[in-house]
Length: 279
Image (cartoon, rainbow, N blue to C red; front, side, top):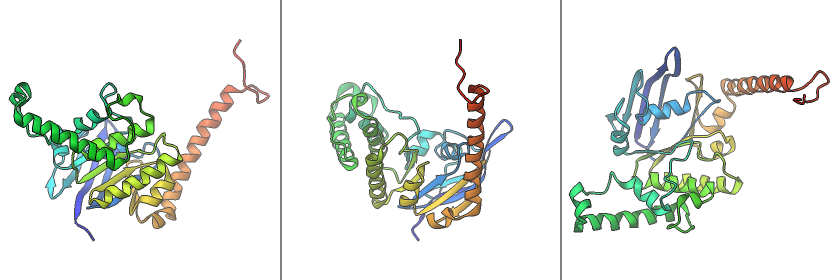
């Protein structure tokens, strides 16, 4: 077994009287692909936000690379080797594809304010190195579009890959991906699957939140399942797929959603079962 990279122990986060994460414990190893799954509202993104410093846990600890990072600022945690993407794209629409990736490298460029103001030789060396590195990661994710074009001109699936390239440009040891397959078509999901495997092949741990269970089952080495903020299962895809607690959590969520949908349809239909028309 490879070395433990991330160690989450008894982590909890509370908003008022609601515990979004409740006593979560799991580990991630170097170069591993681990998925965190669960019904909507299970606490998956809240867990990511605690790990990356956007939320401060109300209890428990987060250790990364043997160093306790619980409650530290996001910039400090990012500099320690954790990169992430978000459910909603956080790209700079007016910047070019290339500059969006370069923007992810600011923590690695050795420049100071004076270098930037005077355009010293060190400034230009840093800029040239950043540009070369950005091209390398865009090549890695398979970006073939014009890299000097504004990012907003790219299809959604291509923007997703640019976001991953920007995260990789930070040279992380662990990459957190929050629903990266959302909005992608079948071909784009296949390329994403291949990309995640190649990222793990570099020795970078990948922690994935995703609702596409086919993708999760194919790419994951282990899966952690959450429900109402608590871990209800952990194991290989085969073990998790057949776990009664997991089946019940998902079927229960589906039944609740079906009930809400039935109530909505009933409210919109008349006594004869046809949709009422506003007059």
